Image (cartoon, rainbow, N blue to C red):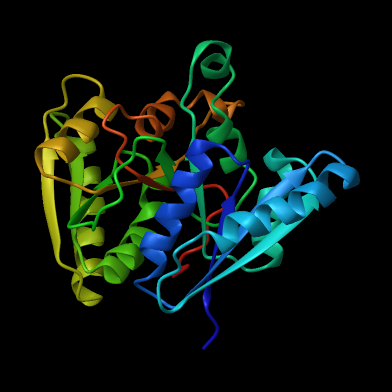
Length: 268
């Protein structure tokens, strides 16, 4: 069986180093190739980065069962990472984010822009994300059918990490909305039971911002990974503030996220 392929976009920054270390951390749980990818502005700069990227690779402590390769291409990270991932049949893109500030927040974080270009899941970390074993992950579901796109991917990750899945949704006072969310949660519960995944279903109060409740739940329950689907009915998906707030959460909890418009069913 071929190795799983995890792609790590690398720009020689501290947050890129954290993404690489996190990829190595999760990669040791499954037969994995980690490909460190740098996109240069032109061929001359790319030739310089080849040696530098190999130097980064040679300094790594690589776990057993993990293979690390490097790739330098001329291109733009906002459009070409997704193309590379698709061409190479990558299962996951592990990427660092610097967060969203000022005008970057207004026009959508860099991570959100890159997310729109790829049809495989992303695992996004921050510079101060702690690298530790994941004892549990939380799957955030809402009223939209698009939010269900994360369910299978989160289940795959729970199997890899041998951790419990906590599915949360907001309580609904409206009968129609309550029936809808109950049906969706029932579908999720059945899928996880059929796959032998240890899952817990909980409902949180509807008052307040959902992103804050998801992050609060994760903190209170020692959750090591938040799983969501990115989707928006607007013409400009980068304005999906729920996803932006989650991936730049202050506790720096890693986030597993899929683009619901492009996502396939299973990856791992």
